[in-house]
Length: 322
Image (cartoon, rainbow, N blue to C red; front, side):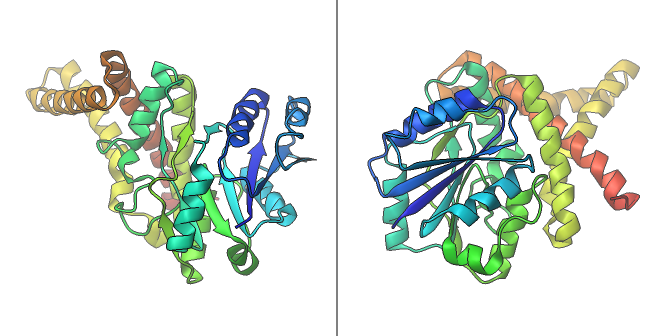
């Protein structure tokens, strides 16, 4: 199978360099790479040019439209049988394409998603963020997991679709705010087979500090409400958990300030949650430092998502504003 790897890029020249370095090492060689500069001010033209003799590589520049429509641009110019989408902040294991090719040959999927993990080169903060985004004690436990709530929805940091899917369903119709989930739902609705390839893992850097992580997860919380405007039935009880958690933290602070007896119960619940995160993260990463940072990451993830979710729930569902 001939794969077209599509990578939207926006002001991240160093990231694309590291990503392309991992693609050079792929053991499966029947693929092309399309790097699409989405209106970047700090472009990567010279960096990409240095890989032209190492990869079947094409480089494009276009006006800024966001990652969803930039992927559509890639679909239009791709030559492959199957299109693979990566975020520019991913590192790809050397056997990734071999794993995908063998999996599709054994159990063909019209679209697939793969999980993400933390690379050994990641900083402790990045490893803590990666833990939080995949932890069973946060909403990360339902991402990239075929045992999650409802249908499995591939995420666009590690996602593949066949040419037939694009020809029938089209591309992304929203460019941000949950565009990958919306696209997955339309693929499901069109009757195509979607699934997880568990071994098709990528190393996803995400954000390098907690301020950036907070902004990203606040955006994700808003995205969940945006998806519900297209597909109301996709707003499920589990998606309210970060908002409930955030309100619980706020109430716990108020109870303690007012010295109410119920503060003892609230503090006990939070302590149990903190201990679960700490010891599970320590067991997963074999590092007390990462385990401590994972507590911060988990609280950042849940409160940022919860605030973004409540903000747009109030504005777009209660007040019905666009």
